[in-house]
Length: 263
Image 1 (cartoon, rainbow, N blue to C red):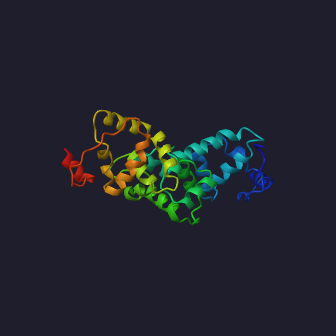
Image 2: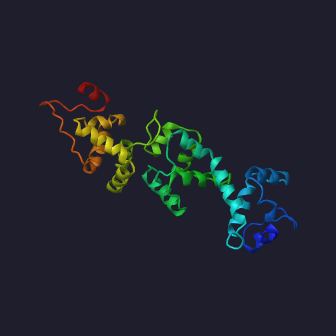
Image 3: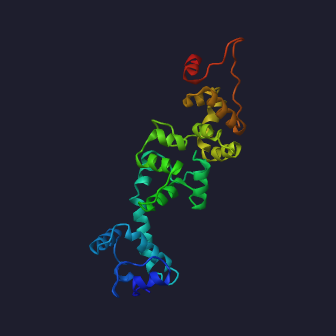
């Protein structure tokens, strides 16, 4: 099929027509070119850069019949991922591409959409979002996450994933704080402790040395939320936090100032 007209292949696959007609417009024209060369050739032929997605999809569908298309399709996908600005921004924020979508604070309808589209990780979300047509309108938390990553908006990122503003990466304490609002909070907490096992181990080491459990949660800046997040994580600790004494009639201090007074 390497010498079959692309327009004929498109018709056989019941997909959209290939816009460039002619018997010489075949896969063999493209399969030996680099990603950049394919883009340039398509532009010379009056096509937009997005046309390469249709070409890659068309060749992918024919892989079962003719293997020479494989190298080009793979090269196209790798190059597209490398040039994906959302993936670049994830790296800039120190957020791993394989972080599970289910551990984000996205609203249930958005999580269900991601499930239907088989988007299990932030990286898959980024690739999917990059491939959407420009005229597709999305809303809700999907749009919020898309905008947050597009503009590297740390405040918005922190609303939908366990991100700590001013630092890189995702964190266990913030994951617990977001999990408390979920209907399946206990399940979310268990998954989070598995994902953040290194942070959990570091916390347990600190507690074993006499460290304050509450101090780990002061970054949340909300006394009520700190307590709820701490209570949610507590059953997963292999080292029990020491009880902190409170003088009779004195309310236990929490948050940043509470931590200062403990020093």
